[in-house]
Length: 168
Image 1 (tube, rainbow, N blue to C red):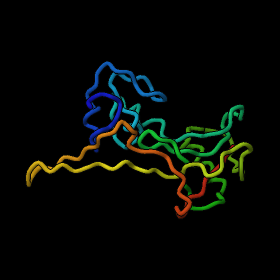
Image 2 (image 1 turned 120 degrees about the vertical axis):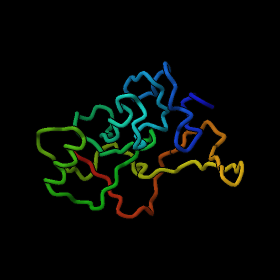
Image 3 (image 1 turned 180 degrees about the vertical axis):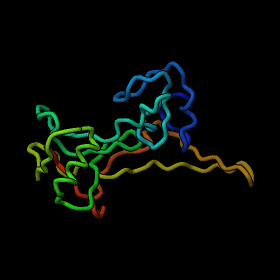
């Protein structure tokens, strides 16, 4: 369906011109509708690109100090642990991570594990498949018939080089 907040077409064209609808939870207020699935998908779907601005953040248990947490990444509207190729990081690598998170000053410190964290935090995405409908030998339409989000976060224990980072 068009403008229902669900990406039914692979490129999201069914959600591109939805003027006057509210933005999905967790996204800045924009004048046009941006489907949850289209937040942090690499395409600027809102007039000022607000849907691509908050794609990295920190996750921590309630009551944790500001600037402390596990580094998380959002893709297709879904948050998951950001994967890093190594477990230990230099001070300059941690400072680069902090700058990517939007912290402009201070010092960076890696913590091995946070209290009250959930083990097996999702670290990958599972994508819902699209079906192909062949109209003729020159036209193929990809579509899906569900209101389920296009992506969901999953824990993939076989994912190589995927180390979470906890910082403060």
